[in-house]
Amino acid sequence: MDERNWLELFPALQGLGETERRILDTRSRILRLPAGATVFAPGKTPQHMLLLLDGVVRVQQVSAGGREIVLYRVFGGESCIMTTACLLANETYHAEAIAETPLKAVGIARAAFDDLLDRSAAFRRFVFTAYATRIADLFLTIQEVAFGRVDVRLAHKLCALADAGGRIALTHQDLAREIGTAREVVSRQLHEFQRCGWVAVKRGEITIRDRASLAALAAARE
Amino acid sequence: MDERNWLELFPALQGLGETERRILDTRSRILRLPAGATVFAPGKTPQHMLLLLDGVVRVQQVSAGGREIVLYRVFGGESCIMTTACLLANETYHAEAIAETPLKAVGIARAAFDDLLDRSAAFRRFVFTAYATRIADLFLTIQEVAFGRVDVRLAHKLCALADAGGRIALTHQDLAREIGTAREVVSRQLHEFQRCGWVAVKRGEITIRDRASLAALAAARE
DNA sequence: CACCGGTCTGTGACAATATCACGCGGGCGA
DNA sequence: TCGCCCGCGTGATATTGTCACAGACCGGTG
Image (cartoon, rainbow over all chains, first blue to last red; front, side, top):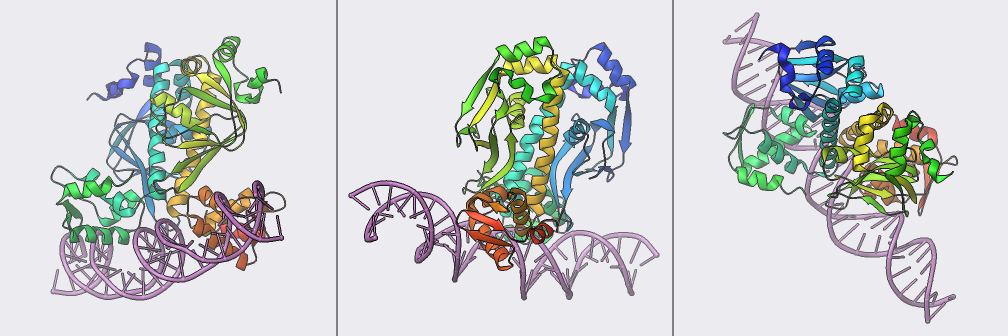
């Protein structure tokens, strides 16, 4: 794809007029980050609104004791609400974001961001709907962390992360991070699933053997 | 206060022009709800944007097992982002809201809400900053639920809820709801605090005797 | 006052999770 | 081949959640 036509990646922004497109053209720049880079961290203040062109960003929280929990991911074609929220409220970040793959993103200067919000209904709608859906995500996360059982949540994650062959190339530590628990808890639970014949585990990889049973357990959350 | 001048309660909306004020005048209505009423519940779809004039709304989630957790409160002069988020994304509510006091609120018809968003930068700013601060709240809540210890969280809540005399007129069940745990856990923990001489408990009321120690525990993990 | 019903609290037993402290073994680079 | 790091297994223990009650308190009502 031609980099200068990145706007095509955002169907919701197709309605922008010439003026707004020029603002985007002249007051933004393409950013690149390698996999593993920190996109933002707690305590920092955002300088740009970020539109992700390509790659995956993981937004997570880290506890004092080193435990982590994944809050959501940002994919190509999306914006990061954490950034816009902090821009708007003039606050510092409360979470950290990691590039899971090499990233290509557009950084829109803060003033231009404000400008676009004022000018374009399409741009507003884009930002607002991103907010709304993320908020729904966060509510679900709270629901699960506060009330959910780890076996149910793990089963759910396994089903969600497995490829067509039912394989998941993650360490127990990675899975623990996904659901916000400790590595040992995941190890023991996987062992239990294996005892039931639902999965096969080996170093750095899990294979689902009985997807139906796992899905049934995962559905026990309502 | 004269009810027709309710706009004065919202300093952030003082910048509205004549046209916008007329929209608010003609396409909104004053709503009242008694204490204890349900403002919204999971599965419902919002019909109006709500601006709270007077009273307190508690927004919380309830688990299948009946456990509850308070997410945040909405006070007079604020709007409920849960409602605007669902309005914008055309979704149903994911949480429930309870009137903790008798409420007086302004309901703005959905179309008028969209209209105002398009017309007024002040109105947009008002809605956006409400979002941003709530999102920060939600992140903090996740942090605490996922990683925090109940003794720390309870100590924190007690300090936050106590009046000038150090008294808190809540039941153990109420406190459990505040921090998203079970009633028995709160009872035992309060007993422990009492053993340390930090609080005195009696039916329906807790009195802080050693605020410094409680605050120190509350600050133990920030 | 005595009684009764509901609400609030206390408690023990147990299950589920989290934490801590290891040890084991595989793979990989020196 | 030898270490060494990383992923994983495991027991012991602390913390938290769940369940099933019992008793204590409170406001009515006869």
